[in-house]
Length: 123
Image (cartoon, rainbow, N blue to C red):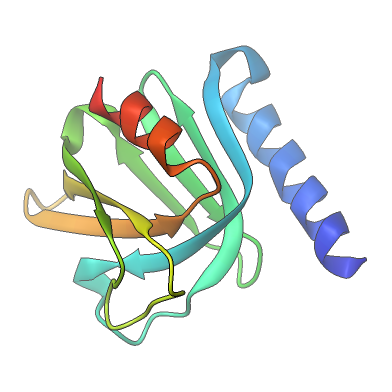
């Protein structure tokens, strides 16, 4: 019950911040596996993943963390089973991008409809 309320609350917050009309896709129950530049000791966590014309945004439930990746900074999208030494036994969506320091970086997410996210991010 607690997790459903958290999921709804974070999804509603993200929709309000981004504007419902601007959201191309949303995964209310994604699992973030961290950012490569942050190293292997990051906490993996549930959150809400949303895509707009301009950015990919992941808002983690607990602890509250936010990752924003500009679409123009995305350099590739691929499937992987591992990210930063972590796995869930299923394929993950790995997004490669140039971070704010101009360095190559990546983040990975467990999403329900992997082909849909790949197709949207490949555009």
